[in-house]
Each structure stands twice: as structure tokens, then as C-alpha cells.
Image (cartoon, rainbow, N blue to C red; front, side, top):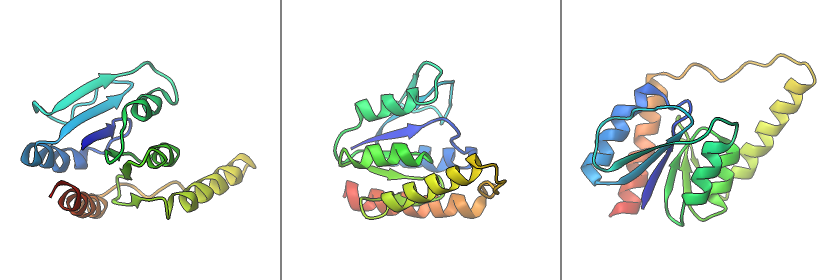
Length: 149
């Protein structure tokens, strides 16, 4: 399994959690972003900077990801593309996207976008905090135990 990290908007609170797991489990990891992102130093991490553009990092991840790989991303359309390749996706708040729930998340995302496009002001997601970090850590560890054992 290769771990891909969508580096754009990757929360700082998650960096030590992910780095510890990468080192402990010796997980080959690729961090992809359109700017320099530093998760930490590890011989298991490769950093790739792609051209600026809305979907450049996403497209690169989808080109590289293979069946049973894991992608950490908050981007729901990217998660959908990853799942369509029989890989896995976890968001920053610990949600494991699956074939059973991704369409629901996409529909909700599209609904909220349509509401915003119509001029309605909506609240964005709540600020990322320690509770979200803990939820991510729990889901990430659970996933790794199930897939690396």
C-alpha cells in the first residue's frame, strides 16, 4: 500500500500523527501539492510539487493511485475518483469514504454549492480542532491495522 497525501490544506495538527504512523509502519508515502508542504523528514516520504491549478494535485494523485492505496484528502470529488479505482480515502476529520457513502457526500456537496451559487450565504465547516484530529487518528489507526496486518 502507498499512502498519498493531498497536501493542499493539510492540517498542521495531523502532521505528527501521520509522520509517526509512516515511520512505525514503514509506509511509502507521496505528498502531492502545488506548493511546498512539509509533513516531516522520513526516508519513506516523497514530496511532489505540481503546477498551480485547481485540480493539478488531484489529477496527479488519480494518475498514480492504485488499488488498495490510501489517500488522505478533504476533497470529496477527489475521494470519489480514488474510490472508483478501488483505493481508499480518509478525510481530515476521520471520515472513511466508501462506495457506500461517497455519492451521498457528493450530493450534499453539490447541493451546498448550488445554494451558494444562488447567492445564499452558508456557513463553512467549523474550524479544525483537537477533536477532529483525534477522530482522524482513530480512523487512520483503525484503517492501518486492518490493511497492514
